[in-house]
Amino acid sequence: MRILGIEGTAWAASASVFETPDPAQVTDDDHVFIETDAYAPDSGGIHPREAAEHMGEAIPTVVETAIEHAHERAAGGGVDGSGKTGAPIDAVAFARGPGLGPCLRIVATAARAVAQRFDVPLVGVNHMVAHLEVGRHRSGFDSPVCLNASGANAHILGYRNGRYRVLGETMDTGVGNAIDKFTRHIGWSHPGGPKVEQHARDGEYHELPYVVKGMDFSFSGIMSAAKQAVDDSVPVDDVCRGMEETIFAMLTEVSERALSLTGADELVLGGGVGQNDRLQRMLGEMCEQRGAAFYAPEHRFLRDNAGMIAMLGAKMYAAGDTIAIENSRIDSNFRPDEVAVTWRGTEES
Ligand code: ATP
Image (tube, rainbow, N blue to C red; front, side):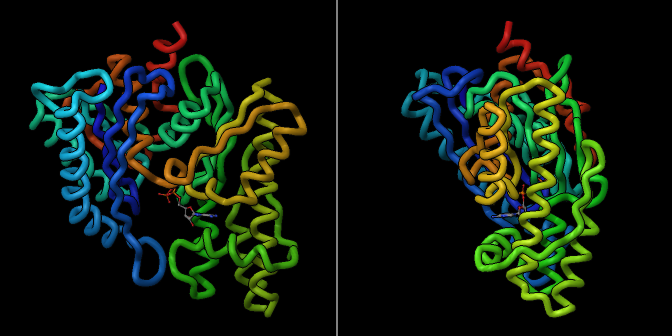
């Protein structure tokens, strides 16, 4: 099976070819190709209009590159000898949401055009469920709790009765967005996360508000307090260290509570903030202490990427979970718990 995936919810114009003999599990014959063109704002954070302009320019190119790659794989017979004749792909999967509406519309239009060009089905993927599923897929875990720590989102998910339930989430801004707003305030270029990670290594811990309410968390107060601290001449490295320790301790506390409440013994990490080494270590230590397994995918699968869209697209396609073009409208507020999880039933039956 060879699936084309297209991602473009915010900054990453990305296309992927995922080829596998068995979408239910990782095999030695799996092949993943990802082509990404990233939008980097000249100043400030992500401007929705500029992001859409970038998407409009970059998506046709990355998609054509991926299609060329699929043709090459098909000409070579691919992993199962399929595709020597006819279409080089079996289906087109695309990110339907959540994300910036103008960006999503460009991605959906491209996906529909490619599906019609090769006369193959369309698969509409929830971007946040894809962040989760790429970790579940690559870890081989059965029923993990998932912490999605990304730019625009932050939530903890667990699977129950055919859906990924939101066990806890941010009450205000996404976790990466909070970090980026702080770095914008001090004049650092976007994205701020990697710079905070680098500066935190040289800093002393500076106390910031720790806000966990039940299973939910809040980041806007930390962001304001961090900005104020720098304005009050607290060394920036110390504030970065305080931000990391505070935010990641909150995420770790809620992840542990979710493991405890659900009785799960597996945790997977998803999202761009998940690339942070300190966050991975805190989660890993917590899991080790309670005898749970922890998995963080490679960085290229944590930040936004079309590989995760193609991988979940393959599972959905195998489960017959495709959509007609007339029903393929985007959903910029697409929540993970709105998705009927069709593919796990197929795997587990
Ligand atoms: P979403 O997936 O919710 O749509 P997004 O589109 O912003 O979010 P992601 O690629 O998941 O995209 O995450 C980007 C975020 O990750 C940015 O806020 C960035 O600052 C943050 N980030 C990247 N690297 C690191 C790091 N090493 N430490 C902390 N944060 C990081």
